[in-house]
Length: 424
Image (cartoon, rainbow, N blue to C red; front, top):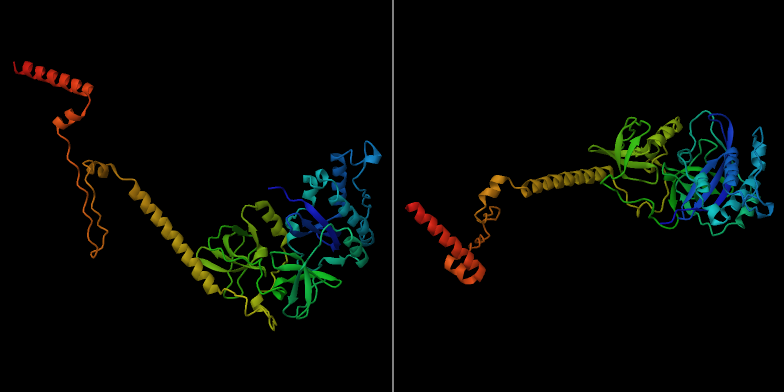
């Protein structure tokens, strides 16, 4: 299977951040060859460092040998002092630079160095904390710039359309307000339950629990429950249950995910207990280093609201969409664990009966068939097959070859002579 590569990069705007110090990051929507779309954040100095390394990797295409051979686009060096004005004025040149990168020949546009720049990182997955003292400020790209980029897109970009099922009031500048019935385009679907949406000229994060698809009641991203719990996760932040169907977990606990839901509340299993738990407080057990980084990033964050807590929801899909209750999760999960334990006991039983002891093998050396005691009383017992009699010596001598007869006669004469000597 061929590796995925960057198909298109769109500049959405930039953010002003205050942690660990004040700085600016650009918001880039990256579209990959496997039709996935990811929202990433990169600083200008980081992009410029990548640019210098790219020129070192491809000196001919960078024009270091012959200037006329240069095909790698130019990028100006970052200023000594980064400001909001300089960040805003660089948007056009940076957008053109990203578009030129993905249009380069495949040996450059699909190299590992370029794909690593646009790959999603742990700090890209979670939005900024909604209840910190200083929230990140988002600045959307201008309409002229967006219209200019549209002519350079190599393929059609179709964003999913969703409808707000209830009024939502933003708590920070990082989010947007919604009224029941508003239609939005989904730019990024994050598994933690916060989706990045755009509506007219506004862009921001919205809880997925307030949105429903326009095309139909079923959401293909919401898979069926997996009671096997094949994916193991660890908690990177403690959470105390606020409702009866939720589960309380401490920091660093290992759990199994049964059902991943779009609103960011997953059904997890700890031992025989199941319940809802915010997915933004979970990390795959195999990614210990990323879990440590995500744990530091989660300080001050809160999970999105659940769909069951939204009041006055005017949704046309409530009747057709089937929701499992917590009792159904627990019942099916308990049944799966019992079946799994029963199969394990059955396998152990078969393993014990398959390996017979030497006493049992010695007991059956006479080729005597064992009678089965498992037949029911109503069923007639099957008779054991009769063991055939051993052929007589005369019959063996009659059917054997001449050489065998000679050997038997020699052995018989020698045994007879030895018996006479013994008697004498």
